[in-house]
Length: 119
Length: 342
Image (tube, rainbow over all chains, first blue to last red; front, top):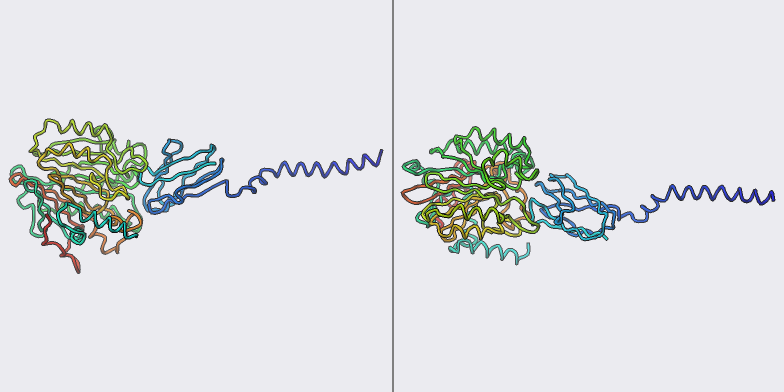
């Protein structure tokens, strides 16, 4: 009887600790599983978006950075997102919470087009 | 650059005017941008003649008059291609003020500012106050409508205009139409006038005599110069169909920061230099971004366009002159001055 109690107590403590650690640690564990999923970058350079098509998982944040001497915008063709004008080295970020294909363009130079594919 | 693309460009340049001016001739023509070129329209036939021979000394007689086109001031731009665009605008204004004949007015064909900021518009206004011509007509460039759907621009420069800032006016028998092709641009497209403006434009021309000289001005070229860079206007053909019956039509544009011209029937097209920075010739660079030239060359690739209308000759002549006159520095500046086009 006494031995059993001791055994349970000695087993229970590490189990509790392990459970607590697992609970506390779970978000970082999940993020570490998919490091590339969280974000992607698109460079605006020479009046073009690169890469022109970027594929990301649901929940990812895409950041555009303008490397031109000329201001640009990042505007969803379907009205989903719209940046303010971005001058040299300025960025715009958008987090995609739904799967789908999101075509976009620069409303200042509409020949500049790109696509975000969210899976 | 792939040869195929280069061939296309060469072909395009050869096709300009369909006048036998090949690429070599065209480039020579481009060199004139750094020297000064008079381009006269006489009875619908365009002829060029040397700037050096002097035009405009007869202007001012009778109904004759002249006006000046400036473009692409990009106030607020401060990158290496020109760290002081306010100074070069000031030089352009000084040049206008020094003209032997005082222009009746100035037309600014857009991109007044770099980022549509109130402070940039303020700086432009301050500089233009010093111009000898007090009347200034504007059309917006895409840089002037970057925020608030162009409200800032319209409030300052678009009083009494329609839609996104289009309007017309008459001056000494010539009908002027300012068109806006930088608003509501569509993905993958070029410049656009849009249905409402086209409808207004058609109505605006109705009932006018075919002998009325017409001057159209807009920011992005109303003829297709280089679609890959968006240097054209998607629905310009429809707009130009409305002016076909007129005997003299002159189209003035900016946007491409270099002089280009073309004649199609009775319509002559012209783009002006910028007062801020040059841009590369079509397809000659990876993109249309600002072109950096040696500091001492900059003022040769910036400039103003002086447009003369002479009633007796039924002619309209355009003189493109750089901020620095060709005679004032060392070599090569007389290229093409005595040549003619047309």
